[in-house]
Amino acid sequence: MPLEKIYSLNKVLHLIRQYDFSHQRRIFFEYILFGGLNDDLKHAAALASLLRGIPCRVNLIQYHPVPEINLPPSNVDSMVVFRDYLNTKGVICTIRASKGEDILAACGMLSTLAPRYSQ
Image (cartoon, rainbow, N blue to C red; front, side, top):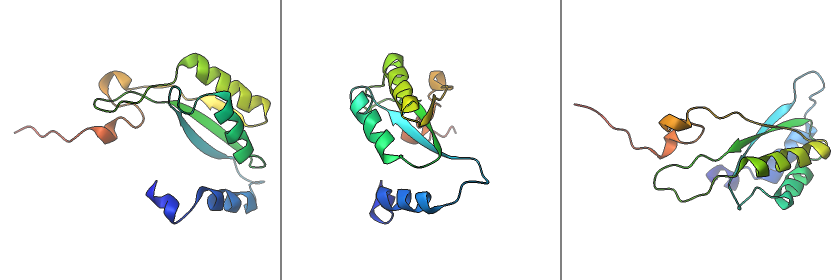
């Protein structure tokens, strides 16, 4: 992400660790899963390590295929294993329910579509 050049992930996580969340709800992280790219236990372990010590919740999002983008979605079984691993490591993790895929309006799908104007 371009913003990473200014605010590195490690710097952001360091600042989050300094913040007092004792009187607030926990912070949420969204993690999109791509089949065979970042959805195995190696990646779950790395994410658990990265978030160690941060009172947070991780929402797992299944990638939704979009036209002209050749990326594979993660399967539900892999997502469940990923979620369960994080939960055993003390990272509260849920799989976000998906809506809108049938009309290309699920999370992240609209960004790839060019606007179409009728005359």
